[in-house]
Image 1: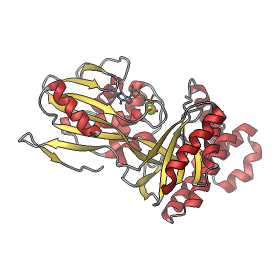
Image 2: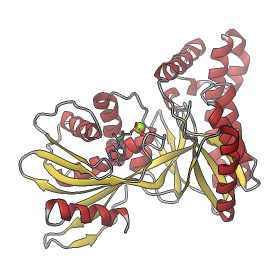
Image 3: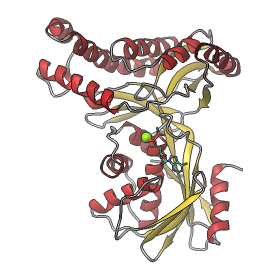
Image 4: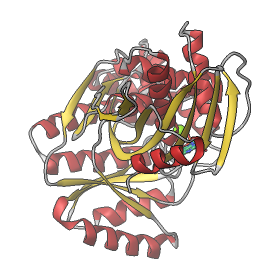
Length: 393
Ligand code: ADP
Ligand code: MG
């Protein structure tokens, strides 16, 4: 039984009667472009075939009542009187809060939710949850769906309600990706382009089983070092500094700040080059960009940990691997590898073995397909029967 059927059946069990809408929104993995978002730069994420699913139907009393299968708990809140609390329902309240701030009139609903995006491992289950609930709110309340706007709603929910200072990448990937494509996103203009993934390659996410812990301060420090470098060059963000300009003036920078800036400037270029490599089906070239990206994150930005370095090394030892790098904010979490499609099983077994040996930890490995962004999967018509619809972003 797939998750769509599961969520639908659970709905029937819990509420009696069928849901009127089922929506899903995926997690994401960033192929390249790390820490570039807050420097107005470029990123290249793709939505993965792991998602949060919600089955729902309207309620007339302005309440939202949701049961989470994964947490085996439920919560009810009033749209008229949103109050901060703790736990998974904060993401739903956050979305409602932002939509209301923007003047949308929301209707209540009851629903069931479940997902298979690993939580807290950097595949952005939180963005998936935000966009799945945005899909449900939009469908139940008759709001128009605009992927970029809803991504912004999700980001603001996370920033302004949940209190996590994230950029726009995760929500944009979860909202707007296309099946079989990565999303080339300009974080300044929010212009985007869907770039087809080359054939015969698998995207493999490798979770080190280490977590980032309390690294807000390290993240904020990177941000302020980048801002300091941008001020030095007299630009709004490091995105505006060319390599030639950097080379000419870098000696005026503090050594650490110089390396932080160098990561951002070279990483932006790597994203542009990666898009080019994908367009020309150049897997070796794409892999090399991932490798170079990891070295830069390790040595210049210094956001890897031992486990990330070990798992990337284990991946790159395999002849089937075109390239690998840490992905996400760093200091723990996941790495991503591009692997020859026919050799996934051997790759997975060998990386597991090598990583266990070097780190003593058990990795989680997810072979991912590039999936579509948030969509409504089923909508009931007036007769109460299902009609499969494909609403792409
Ligand atoms: P991630 O890196 O996965 O985004 P976060 O800490 O930002 O990690 O978000 C994880 C939180 O999102 C969980 O603690 C939970 O509150 C919520 N969440 C994620 N997946 C689910 C799910 N399947 N059901 C309910 N809540 C979920
Ligand atoms: Mg998150």
